[in-house]
Length: 307
Image (cartoon, rainbow, N blue to C red; front, side):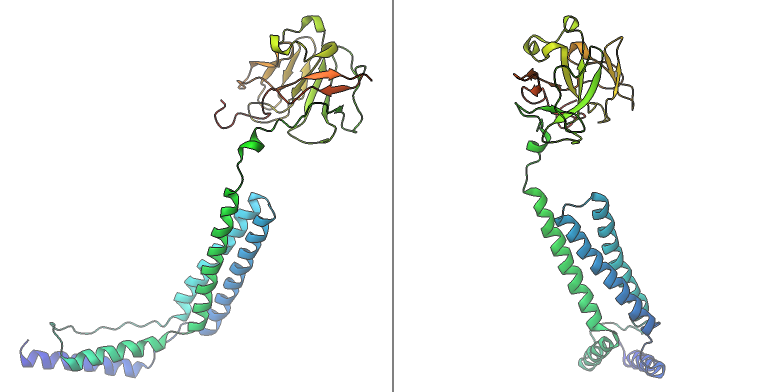
């Protein structure tokens, strides 16, 4: 660069610096309201993060987990956006650029201006506090998520609930005897230790024993014509609660799946493709019906490798 052009560029840079001096320090748009709102959103996010950890470690509902996490992340996001728009100085600088290399004096001046501009950042301590809190909260949430990896879900999924020797009881907890039902009648029963358990609910039906066509390995599962099936539909998990006496069919009211009671609750209509799990029964010496084991398969709708 020749001397006249270099001198002109230096004069332009000096004029820019003089213009910045006339303006004074870059202004912060809303210092007081900005600080107040940033702190409010920051505290909301911090409280929501703590609430998320409490709900997670207390095995709370997924709805609360999602809500608290969304509020936490949203609060931090709003705090950072308001910080950048209302607390950061707004400045536009236009400066002529000359060809490199620049002189030592110019580099020193540029370095001095850069360090001087760093003094214009407002509420640095607040920004550090927000950053430290975000990092700490994120680490705590991620570390807590590893808790879910510690337990294998399969034992719970394949637990048939009923155990051999458990008495069948009604909703009031009263044991069910062999004289409780007449052929064509039914009732809802539970294991004596899990009255009201949704997955344990079982429909007990008394049919004409001569009409039963159970699989050969279940020939002794229906004493005196009593058959018991899981009440949880294998299609979508609704409660199978309608029994048609004339056809010996159980029906699910949600999607009209039907099951043949006489033939091991095989599906005969509707979207269900799996039979209702059957509970083996026997009568003890006092005439009380008891479970001879667990369900023929885990109760509930299709899951994992099951159709």
